[in-house]
Length: 127
Image (cartoon, rainbow, N blue to C red):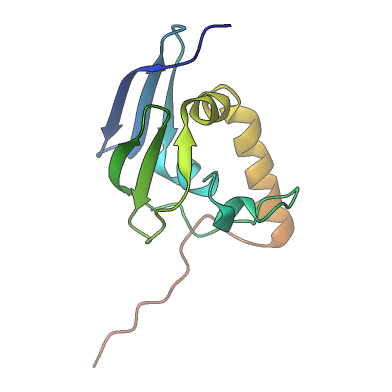
């Protein structure tokens, strides 16, 4: 099998989606929230755990920066401060190809944990 390589990478700020096309003709649009909750970092994937650490309250997260990491991955920085983990081409292809199934599993895990996609931090204002 030929090596998967991106032919197009573009972050759409308005829709908060990363568009990535591959040399096999497949292309995906991945939301910032989806990328954040499926980060390949140890902070999210855990250290050798089978089940990733549940991320919640990330509905409004945005991408601040996307940069290449060598010739094999992207480093994505988010506005919630998360910037660890390298999204390899194979990883991006996999989460793109399986986006519907992975998203449903994530939503089910949120529901089972009684958590929300919403950021429930209350903003305090001085009076």
